Image (cartoon, rainbow, N blue to C red; front, side, top):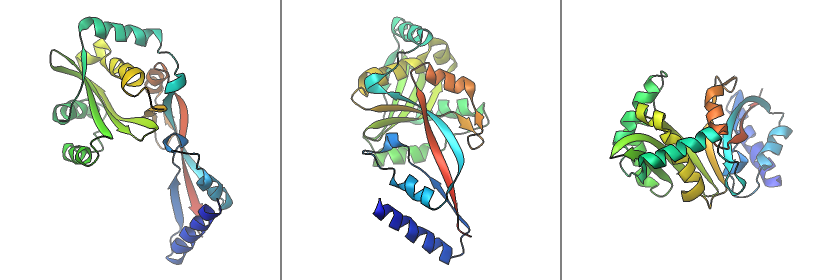
Length: 226
């Protein structure tokens, strides 16, 4: 804790000496920490940091998970009955085309280009993985996961129209939580906010809560230097 206070003192001294007016700081959520380490939050308090943004993320505690809702369980059963399969794909190309098409409807696009996500996958082959739901090789849905050790975080989730009708995303999530990543501590669905946390996408967060997700916040602080 003392070392962390010294580090913040040094950071603030450095930026003050260069005429910087404020520091923005995003605190790492405790679910991504290997061991309790919130010394930075105490240091922020000591420097009168102001909380200016708070995003709400939906997280499942895998060892004590909340059961999927009846609607979601029915979707899983439907996928099993239809013979939908979940595969891991090393090539993101086809999925990125689907993801881009889905996000375009919301005037958005993937944070990473196809070339960038392939580069990340190459550099972190065990940590970054793509799981797809397919029916007779037709791509229905996909989820990209980032493995942080204790926590698995979902970055990109998308359905085709056929996948939406089948509940293919629910099917992938169910299998990741209950099978592939069952030895992890947390499964993170990510945030459901816009406009720096002020706007909550209620429909989106409802879907995550129906799969057992509950709120963990991501906090952003400002330290005024002058």
